[in-house]
Image (cartoon, rainbow, N blue to C red; front, side, top):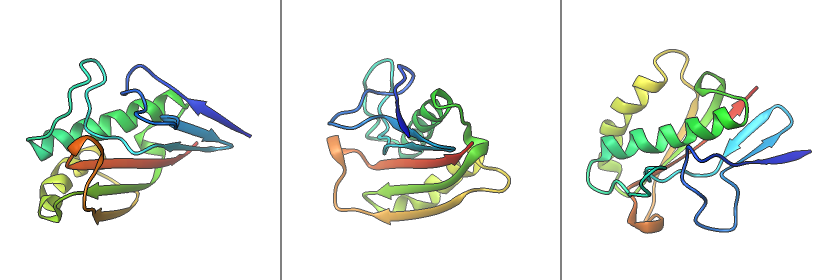
Length: 125
């Protein structure tokens, strides 16, 4: 059984998908661009700020699904420039200081809306 997750604390989906899905004991977030939920503004200049916004968007969806960052078992990070890897790690480490989840990170040719980063998470409740 699956249940869509929707919250006003993260930006609305920009396509035909849910912000997240609760599937049994797992919460899956859709990829989160660095779009501020309240203003709808995309952070396109500062990669560290963009990473914070993307992580916070994932966090809001996880919480709406009954999970938290402490429940995250896997993350995927998409970057348009792998040279941003170190800067993103600096931010990421603040959110996962101990027992960080498994992670993949890829450089991609482009992301929606011209974003520099997109992050998705999977959590186990």
